[in-house]
Amino acid sequence: MLVVINVTCRNRKEATVIARALLKKKLVACVNLAPVDSVYWWENKLVTSRETALACKTVARNVHAAMKLIEQLHSYGVPVITVEKVIANKKALDWAANVTNH
Image (cartoon, rainbow, N blue to C red):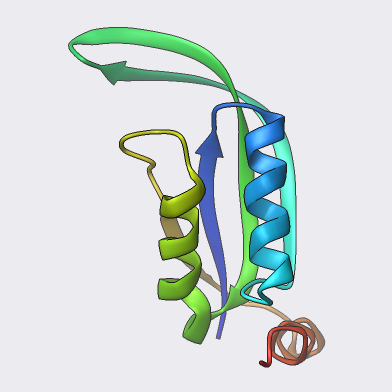
């Protein structure tokens, strides 16, 4: 099963470090980075900030290891990491499974 792990990072530099670490360990097949404007509650204040979002494509067997690595490298005290199961074409699923086969 193909999944996408989503997390926002403080900035592009941190996002790139996390993306490369996930890729080097073959926990993910691909990472998309995109600038986002986020609005959220933090310490009883409404905060607006510019962040970098990561969308990490992988297979289900790698989710827990990838989440653990993200938490280790992330600068936020509470990084919000979500996982979505996605319907994908067979070629995409095969590619992700082959690339992350370690």
